[in-house]
Length: 464
Picture: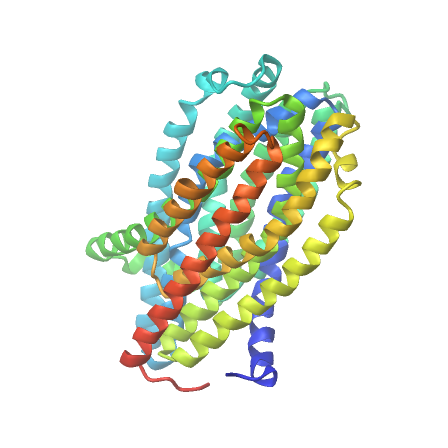
């Protein structure tokens, strides 16, 4: 067993990669949090509309976001091999992955527009109150329009993460978050000559900020001398056969990741619909707890992204010892961070809902859900890192099956049972989250250990 002194270099390397990703993910989550806080002070119906719209939007959208995550381990593996391969060959391979990723994103964007656009006239069929549906329709329309620029931003982010750079995405995300907050203030409440538009104004602000993100990213990529060859090689040296092969690789790795992400998101999306059957106050409280849990989950996602990068780089070098150490270091880090998050959420459970609303019923329900969400952090963090470890070694098909078992076959039925026959209401759904995600975490980590044992028999362990 490795000692603490042996792990310290891995903690440092993982955190160096993870910290910008944490801020990026935190910033992305902050957009939804700020939307909820600002819209919640406008009207409870608008707060419920934002949560309802985002639940439907991201249930379908996350497939594309997950599918694009397949680019990171592919690029990372090529980066890991680079020192032992000819420079031009390595550059060309990475550049062709980027070129293929652009085509892949165009295909995904078209599919998402078609799927999400058809939901616009169907929003009234999900059992929500009429006031919520009226407020949701324009907000939902604007965020659907934002799909194309948002996915191209995701493509560029995943590509640079594969190269080991996580700083650019952080800077752009944080900058656009500040812009989103300013535009929310203008459009939600009506300032600088704009009418007060509530949830609709939040949708307009989101569309503007998301549209700017990929353009800023592209400017940065073109301006960096070390990254410019990837664009030039992608344009000059990409052959149709190479593009087809890369598209297949992106699909074979990305589709299961996207499917796994959809299964997890489906659980949470259906929870919004089901909790909405109780009351708009319960739905608003559910949104508050979800937003707070998302903040700590973004930290876990940051650690997970770093894990995928570090594991794929070490796998490219053929160093299984370093693969294990990087993965274990991420487990330790996420447990520490989730402990801090759990302590804060449980101790501040009676005050957090007050940031979002003045409705006493929403505050009452929300305080209970925030407390349960504090305990939920451990299961959520461990399953996130477990999935990231498997992505780093491009083992993505079996985890999708595990996700179905944990999220759909276990957690969802249990949530319905606890909510209604057991009369636990919204807290019953959150207890089922803990059970389902704990199951997923256990299965992911067992699978990773099994795959590592197989690799140790096939590849040398350098101990570096």
